[in-house]
Image (cartoon, rainbow, N blue to C red):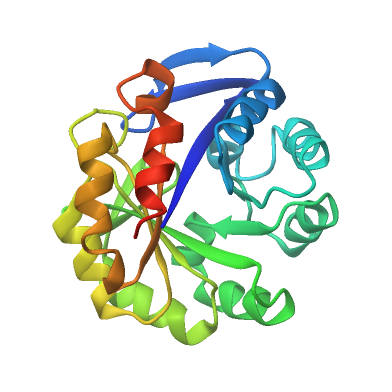
Length: 243
């Protein structure tokens, strides 16, 4: 199982939000490229980047920083989400060295777009489903829809996406532990891999998630915990390696 460090980008800096609120952020570093290097040195096998400004603007706002990270660590798979809503953006990121692009809001609003992109860029397109109480949220979590997470995931599975990144909004950035039950339920319902996100707090969460990894959970994204020190990333990845 992969433990994937998150680097959330806002105005070119590495930050963390609480429950997706842009006005409730903590700046952890002015140098995201250096931050990525820290996680590479600690044993990261993949990096998760989020263009927070892009998520709200609907188009890339931190592309220069994202490209710099991909070029600085060419052997490290990078996945990026936030503001990816057209083919040109996907192509530009992949050409810059990013391995995976994550479609979120656009996937819910226009499923046909996902089908087309997953076909054209086979193996490189993932869908991010962010949910609260089982319902998918869009527009940087500003809007909670009536769409059921599992139903949408099954649809995207048929469209050929590489994986689903599942975030429990109520847990994200709150240091309350990952929602194991909801994540495992989703993983069991679909045949493509699930990457868990939101709530990873300490090593116990890695153990708990690892116990259900066989259900189809290929990894977990962690953010605030590794920046605030409640989770030792290197030790967490060693534990994840056992599953």
